[in-house]
Image (cartoon, rainbow, N blue to C red; front, side, top):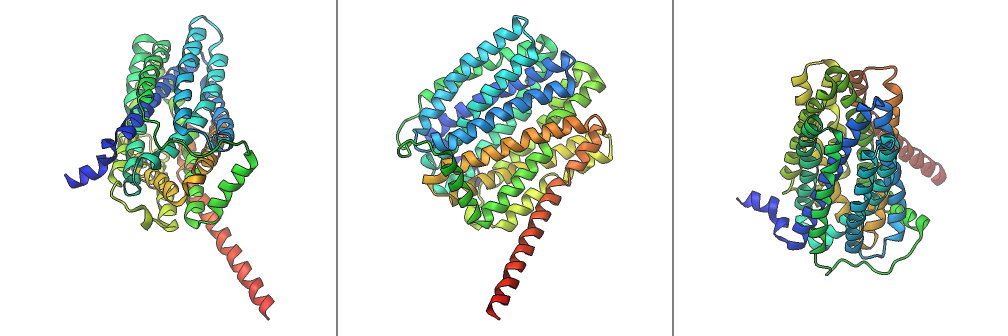
Length: 417
């Protein structure tokens, strides 16, 4: 009971509970929209290129939002940002749905909506990240991030894709797109009830390069943060394209529109395991997590994906997805809490936006790379290769760091003599 109370403790804070409800409903809306958009373009015979275009457009929007968000919103009321973003998402989603239903070319409509929605997400996510330490005590930060990183995969990768896939089979992709609207409306009601107390962070200013420079300085001065960021980005590169683009298209080629259900089963296992991993690390003391632990966690995340490349057995694919989700859920929660604990509140918005910018930049690159490689390699080959990418990338940076330190020591010894 004590362990359970530790895990769920932050939910007893009214503002945090309302923030999580609003965020969860936004995730539900985005997930319904993504499932509907994916199968709309696949059903329209656009395949990998169409799916990659929508995901890439969303990534571009997030990159723009993250770049602006770190500087323009550094001194703004973070809660006000969250409210306005959710309010603006409602008419955007309704307009996109109306255009798709009216017969306008769906790929262009969905790509345009993805850019604008991505831009709003680029403002929303750093603002939510800033509100966490405002509402939650430091000793509960890992638990709070565990809840967030449990809510996201349960909804975005488990429950909603399953429900969305059933909607696609029963009502078509448009029915899934429509389901995104009421979720946003309820999210707006929850965020409207959040108390404004302790949500302001100084005076607003616009210094893009200054904000980026401050974020880079925070990462450079902490090996724990710098190596953690490298590991995080390598995992995003290794998973975004293969799991979001290659796998659903491969299942569609195998089973037609019914492949949506098979893909939902895999993502459900992944999401449920990620939620378990995120909640399991709630008691971890973030102060005890060093650079070595962070690097080790990120390196292990994708290794189970090699099973997908080695065998076509669907049960083994499910097992692999579960292992990846379990490790990723734990790693993501610890990493988010590490950033929130190590970075001063005055610079947390810049750092969060800079991190989101890099993550959003890497995602579309991964998607685009998979779109190109899919013309030469099979889905299993691409996913199998991606399983060792984090290990290779992190090892490369460690070797470079060790070599650079040795070179500096050698020069220092030479200067002394």
